[in-house]
Structures are given as C-alpha cells and as structure tokens.
Amino acid sequence: MPTSRFYSFLFAAFVFYFLANQTQIGWLFVVSALLGGILLAGFFLNRRSLKNIAGSRQLSIPEDEALHEGADLTITLQVDNQRTVAAAHLHILEHCPLAAPDSDEHHLPMFIPTLSENVQFDYAFTVHRRGVFHFPPLKMTSRAPFGFFKKKGQIDVPTSVLVYPEVKKMRRFALLDRQPAAQLSNPRAGIGNEVIGVREYRRGDSQRHIHWRSVARRGQLISKEFAEEIQPGITIVLDRYAPISTETKHNPFEIAIKCAVTMAEYAMRNHYPVHLAVDNEDMAFPQGALVWDALMQYTARVESRQTQNLSDVMSYQPMQQFVAIALSWADEALLETLFVMKHRGYNLFVAIPDPSSFPLDTDVSAQSMKSALEQAGIDAVLISHGDNWAEKLSDR
Image 1: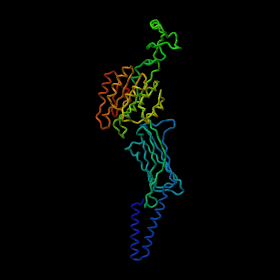
Image 2: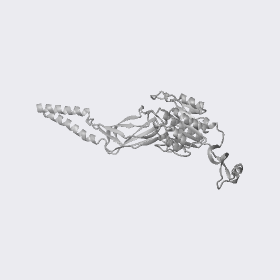
Image 3: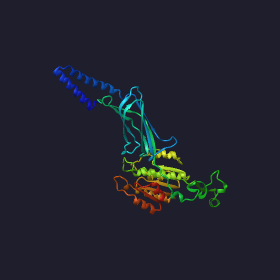
Image 4: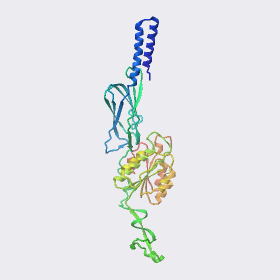
C-alpha cells in the first residue's frame, strides 16, 4: 500500500522530468530517473519485508495450577526472524482477550526497529473474566526500507486459555454449620434405621424386618420400609436466567457463578459431597458428586440464557438434603417452587444478586423476594454490585 511519502517522491520525480523535458538539461533527467528507481526498489523490497517472520507466546501459569479470574498474569511474546537478512521497521499489534477491554494491554502496540534473530516482549496484567479465550493472530505492518509502501501481514500464534471463575473462601456457612448430625435421612426408601412405612414382603427381606402387627391384621407377610441413610450432601443450584444481555462482566449472572463456586468450595473443604443442578438444555453438566476440577471446567464455560426454567430444574432434578441456590435474577415466580421445597423438608439457602445495583438498564429490586423468603423461614442473602460475596454469604 503506497504511503504519503511515496506520492511526494512520485510528484517530485514528475516535476524533475517535466523540467528536464522543457530545458533538456541532462542532470534533471538523471535526478528524475533516480527518484523513480528508488520508488521501484522500495516497492520490491517492501514486498518481502514480512516474509518468514514467526512468533510464540508463553503464559506464566505453572503446569500444576489453573488460571482464575482476578489472577495476575505475565505473557512473554517472542518474534523470530527466520531469514538471514534483518527485518526492519516492524509495527506489531497484540490483542489480548484476557485483559480488561479498557486496559492498555487489551490492544498493545509494539515497534521493532531492527529484527535480526528474535525479540521478546513481556507484559503483565490482571485477568479480567472467566471463560474460554482464543488469541487472534498478531497483526504486523512494515514500511521498510524507505517508507514508501506499507506491507500488512499477520503471525498466527494459536493460544487458547481456559479461565476459571474467581473463588473466595467463606469463613462459615450457616446452612451446613448448624447441622450437627453425621448422617441424615433421605426422604426415599433405602437401608437405614428410621421406619417410614410398610410394604409387602419380598424375597430376600430379613425376617427381623417383618411387621407382625400388619401380618396379624392383613393375614400376609408385611415388611418394614426404612429411610435411606446417607452422608449429608449439598446441591448447588445455578440459575442461568439473564433477561438483559450485556458485554460487561459486572452482571448478576457472573455473581451467581462466583457465589456457586464459593459455596461449593466451602462444602468440599468441609468434606460434604457436592452435587450440581442446572439447566442442561444446551450444555451438559457433570452428574453425581463433583470433583473440584469438573466443577471449575463447567463453570468456566457455562453461559447465561434468556429463558427461565429454574422451577423445572428444582422440581425434577435430584436434590440433596441441603440445597444452596445461586440466583442470577430476582424472579418472584420462583417463590412457589421454593416454598414447596421447604415444605418437603429440604434445608434451603438462597443467594440473590440485586439487579438494580448493577450497571444495567433495569430498576428490578430483589428486596421484596428476599423478604418473602425470610417470612417463609428460608435463609436468603442479598448481594449488591461491588459487595464481597464471600463475606455476605458467611455473615448470613
């Protein structure tokens, strides 16, 4: 691509040629030809200015560690010249999707006057948000050797990064800490000591479990049915409903994810089995008792939806005795489902981000929903934009 300098020299060449043609002075022809030759040489030399330029990118993440939102990260970018001839006047633009959009590192320009073998750049920043990120190719331009032409190109340095949600440690969690029992009864038939009813005798039932009063009344063998005894577990319910879409990470859905993983971390740290319940229409989630890595992998990738079906999730997906619900929107249509779960004997805790406190175009407040839950005897905490969610969850 010609630059303004090219047009200036081209104009000068024509001026000298015009004067030479009018005056027939030989040295004017020589100057005109010299200027044209320089332009022609600059054109061919500039075409090869970005040839055989390669690059690499290295992130300062230890192999046995994961990258979380809010972590400090250093990236080392290396540009290599694979030719024997040095490259010059290289302008490189690095686009870093991990940095905050308004930071200098998000679009980072670099200039290399002369590139003989390789040059390294280091830049540090704070990881802006969770998710899966792919670095775009490095954009390059060069005006070598004389600045008459601008050559554009790119270096493809494939780099994909998975960023886990930010996790803070809770000091305490009333939902779990107030329960002293080592074992709980699950409201379904199983093997245990608490009798929940009787049924017809089945082959293999122990004779010690025969309910003799029912046998005498009905004239057939009747066996006792026991509640299943299990280790206490907790189900983390993650709400994916976000009626207002936004590009910023400062929204209720992101706070819901942070609350979910923070409560899960406390439960795992205290040896409670953790299960997950979430809308799975477009993205499968790990089943059964979770390991930490599986939870982080899922919560790093999950996205919000504009359809609300949390009532179906809580009604039809299996739940443990403890249920911690991380809402992403104050939807009072969920109250009836929560009241039913409370009536069925589940121990509930609800974290509600207050939409009106976030930089969104809404005046929806979660205060009335919180009050309705507390009147029904359900623990609830209201989290506003800028709050330390771990402290709010711990203080409840």
